[in-house]
Length: 184
Image 1 (cartoon, rainbow, N blue to C red):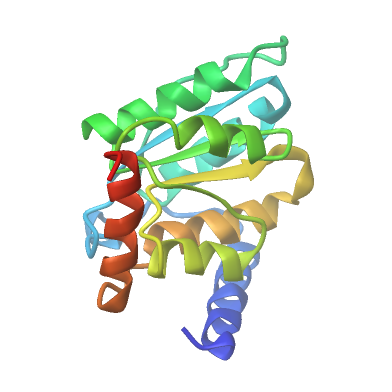
Image 2 (cartoon, rainbow, N blue to C red):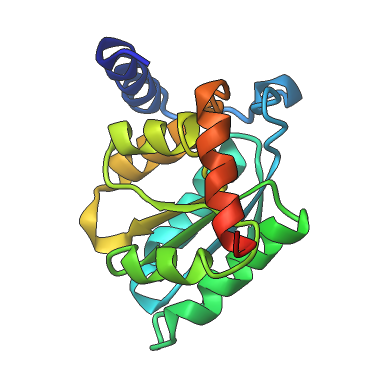
């Protein structure tokens, strides 16, 4: 995707979020059907709890079914426990994609990637979000809770859920990633 195209996408998302007083419930066809993304697992540690709650509501307004795997408060917990829950929901097929939020997104990415079938990507801007989907077919997005504004989270997540895997030459590389998991 050209840099100008991703810039236009971001501007359109931001404009649409700021021009409506009330976000209408989308029709069924508004959900990203190109990749059949309907069910999204979402989790967080204590540092990402408040952001998770906002993102969960945002996903629901976009028409996605959000499966919240916790945590349910700001009480201290260990991020690997919730990263594993998100990853297992995706790996099992219960959810199409997953989102995990912790303090920086790094530890959750590491934990999610230990689950067979997961390609978790720590993203920090729109360019990395698009790359994670187009080139790597990422199925889990990890984010740092205190590192972004609400609007940045919403932009990145919407674009991540709507960006298709480009396939082509990227299949060979994704298959090599998955072969590493099988020990080949």
